[in-house]
Image 1 (tube, rainbow, N blue to C red):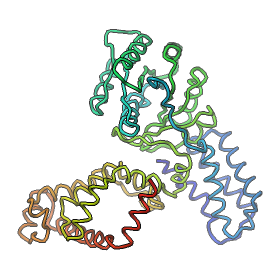
Image 2: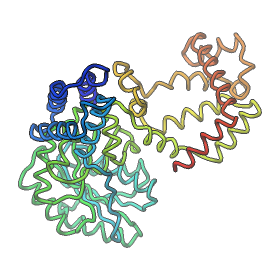
Image 3: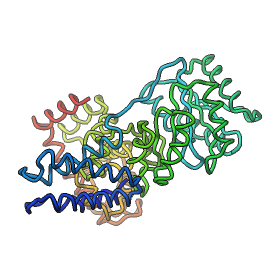
Image 4: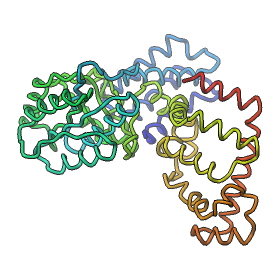
Length: 442
């Protein structure tokens, strides 16, 4: 995400990161390039101009020209201002009410229906809520079917009245159904259009008045840039919504919507969509996003994702196996599955400081583990539990069964051996201290 913007900002700030003489002139020149990078990312011209003006004022006010590391200070100032531009602090979702009613709004094609499912899954798994999804797009038959498929996928009930063409009535009936069936969150997926029109705005306004939602969220396709911001303003003028959801941030987005929308509508970005899967949803943290835009990674989010998959009982069993030299390929496969649950590989790499820049031209495939998994699944139970029995003839059979080469099997065996040794070393004091630190971060 934001790859193009990140690259241009890095080039703009590069001249101030060295040991060359820093002057008021080249600071101004650098900020001119920063403004150009923001405009290329489809950020509103006035916002981009105000952004660089503010950074320049702060830079001169903090005597950036005379500091020991003026380049580093400029990066910090740009980072701080990016954070403020995107909202400053993370804003949570209001889960008051009995039930909590969340109204989803936005144009057709923004990913509204899919994100309704992601939000339902998030509230079910992370907040232990009993969620009801409501299909109120009575004009697009596929919309209700899509919501039902999503609901079945995540184990959440979907309320729909196929023969009813009144979305206001459906919404009221759904809330009554939720109260009768102990549902404490109702997410209403409304109809969208290809463009803003009077019928759409009247309908969403009528639903809003009828159900008085605790949260009205506007779903934005982040790949539409400044157009998304203009649409958000029109919806906000009518609904006075509570927050924004940015979808498709895993694509080749320029970033204009994320950087402009808070300034235009003065409403926080609450969630972002980072992939196709139902768990590809993140709470939006402006400071973490600013770090990622500037190539600093997002270690905090990476650790949080790891902790979500961390199972203390499994970890204890694994430690015992490692201590007894019983770590096998089944355990290795289990570790791979935990990594895969953390999200897309491209997204995870972007959270590692410097990795996004270093691997910007590398195509990181989510199927990167497929070959390894095929090799392990081609092993017998004995081979997986006791890798030392794997000899040359067994390697040939494993390679043939997995559709790989003996060289690839040898490479996996070598990687496995190195990992086993590293994990054995981690059993010492250093590894225990690291685990204690990670627990303390929860």
